[in-house]
Image 1: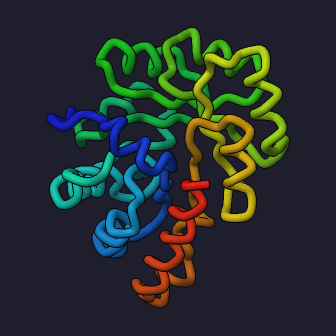
Image 2 (image 1 turned 90 degrees about the vertical axis):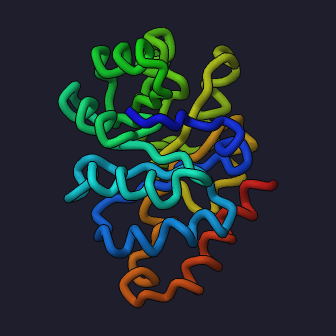
Length: 212
């Protein structure tokens, strides 16, 4: 496990979890400082990305001071052990796995499990979820967050899946406590073209939407 723990102070400065999936280690090495310089603070490396554990280790070594580094797509206890061994400071799952959630709670590692229906979401919360990832969020949109929060305002929710520049503000206004953003944030063309200035400008657009 990482000696550094998840920083809520960092997360609250920019309540967005950037999801890195299937990006090469070399590109990730170049992207992380740009991400931090743009004022974004929390990043998740999915465990189904080749070399994910090594990437988490590298990210913590090089950018651990200014970023929260977590592991995503953690579906099993085995995934969890590999992620924590690599130093992941928080865990994100696409589904509810009681063993994974309870293990994180016991180890005091923030856990954001994925859920969709009100019952799933509430169950994840009662198991000890730090925040519940609402996935896929765009199927029902920002109004769904508002509807969930009306009777269950104690829930902390992280809509993920289809969240982008055009709907970020609406999700936050509806009561989202943070946002999970993958492909729309890590623009494949900008990365492919190694357009790091363009990528930084792109990241800054996302950062500006968080201030609304």
